[in-house]
Amino acid sequence: MQTITLTRPDDWHIHLRDGDYLPTTVSDVARQFGRAIVMPNLTPPVVTVPQALAYRDQILLNRPSGSNFQPLMTLYLTDQTRPSDIVAAAQSRDVYACKLYPAGATTNSDAGVGSIEALYPIFETMQQQQLPLLIHGEVTDTQIDIFDREQVFIDQYLIPIITTFPELKIVFEHITTQDAASFVAEQSANIAATITAHHLLYHRTHMLSGGMKPILFCLPILKRDTHQAALIRAATSGDPSFFLGTDSAPHPRSRKEDACGCAAGCYTAHAAIELYAEAFEQAGRLEYLEGFASHFGADFYGLPRHVDTITLEAMPWVPPKTIPFGPDELMPLRGGETIKWRLVQPEAGS
Ligand code: NCD
Ligand code: ZN
Image (cartoon, rainbow, N blue to C red; front, side):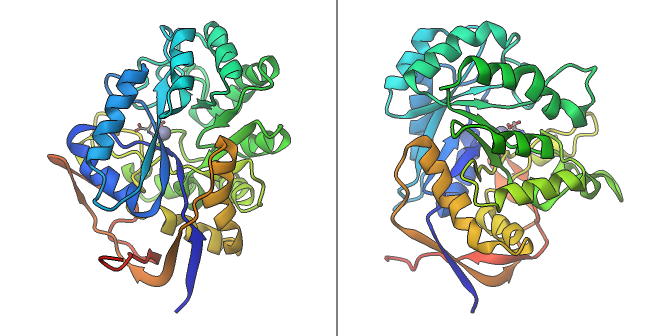
């Protein structure tokens, strides 16, 4: 049988939620990934180190027995963040980055930053403390077309931030455009980008033709096929500036199928590495999966690569259409449809 063995991968951008949702999200991420950068957009958001540590404890309580999965915590930047919060984060062994959400850009971003320029003293401290800045790179101006918000963000905000803080490590999260991919490729090694499996596998026509499909609605929104092609080229190029970040973002089915406004976010944690394998194989570049999934993110964050491996086998399977999600259910991406690759589970007791 055809198999792929990789150094154990990491997920550099995931939403695990909290409370009753953790048993599902944590067991899915822990099955395949060794570490994950955990997004702080809970309600209320994770803004201080003690909150991040309490959230980490909740995640660890839901870790399957025998798993060594490590949640890497982040703080949510707000207009109230102080330089002392950044110093405390940098000194903590469990906080690895801070996340910038422009206010109103996406799910649970109401507490996000109103004025990005007002955060410059915070970026200065992050640069000094060598704490990476993770950016949801979309402008929120309603005058700007939703399909253009990422590329406008580059000119309006990202270039000024990079120019002012050349030593600051920045991850341009879940990029969706050719503009973002070319921009990141031209920058120094301090600037990287994560790419999701769904942006590699789908474009906007998949979401919008034959009836709107809420399951594919996420932010930044899927773009046209030429942008998808640019993301595939970037992810499979072997350029270490691009690495895996699923942006797996579960919502209860009632919020996804809400006639008054579908929640943004795609759930891919149930089959993430398998979906990436499919995208890389379709591009004829399967041999580039390991760098993207298992090496480049660890190198960027200055963490050791894993020494253990995972194996995928060509064993088609069909994920369920719905999976339990606390008191609700959620609709995983590709539920009820065939996925070619399947993660080999370790034998019990091994
Ligand atoms: C994310 C969520 O649901 O928390 N949604 C999404 O569409 N990706 C937030 C985010 O990363 O934008
Ligand atoms: Zn996200």
